[in-house]
Length: 345
Picture 1 (cartoon, rainbow, N blue to C red):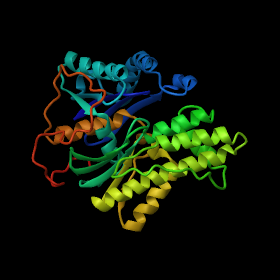
Picture 2: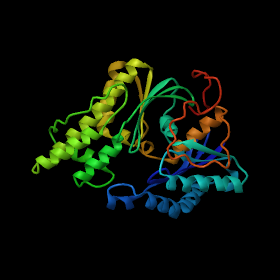
Picture 3: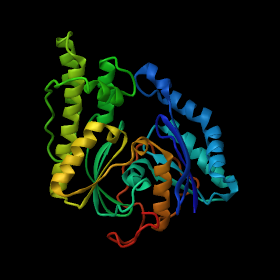
Picture 4: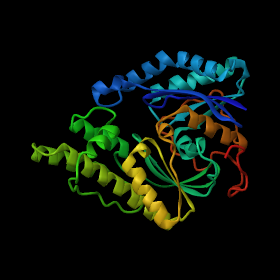
């Protein structure tokens, strides 16, 4: 099974060649630094940049893999959520190739790709597991009861965690994307500013109040040490994420926990999460840093899992779904509770 996958949901352009028995055999991912000037993603520019480079990136990936286009068994692309213009580029490109070459096409939910992304570099992950997806556009708590069977437990009510990082970095004139800049700056502070944190009932998140607290602090303390602000903000986000994760785990205990998405690259989050997991005897799964960011390899993996689980094929005339929530059951079948395992686990 050879899969050529595309990810263009936001500001990363990514193409991956994936084989069921070998995993990723070739990939290219390029971040669109054109948005740095604006302090955030400009949707039209994102779509134009995907369109400009996708063809050549695809040729490069096929050449590295040693594949001819006609040898591809399945084409896959992110169907949503994301920016509609950006999604249309990758989705239409993959669907057109599939039609020309008379091959099947599968649209993959972006967050489902993140859910299973740890499998790209580490074997053994099996349902049931609890997952925290934390990125620039999403902060979600999900229980995975079986392959492609998901239950949303909580989500952000306003900003996603990564979005909060970007906005605070912009307040501090640190550049875009904000997460790496704040993490680096925070390492220069012995202690951080103590910021108030929203107390939201249930398993939902809210980061807008924290973001506003940072804004007011910077306004009222013009001579403040920015490293201390960065450290205090980062610590607040990490603790808010872990508190909700812990509550979710206590209510829905599982032997395995996944933390995925772009913010999962943050070193402080990874450190605190490892300690949390060790204290509770939980197996923690976090993707390798390159697979935390948006990437086509996770789209290929999710497409392969869907194929192995017998999920119905994607309608060849289907359009992207920019606001689609995580599907509760991607495949119409009886849950196997982990007894049906993908060949690449």
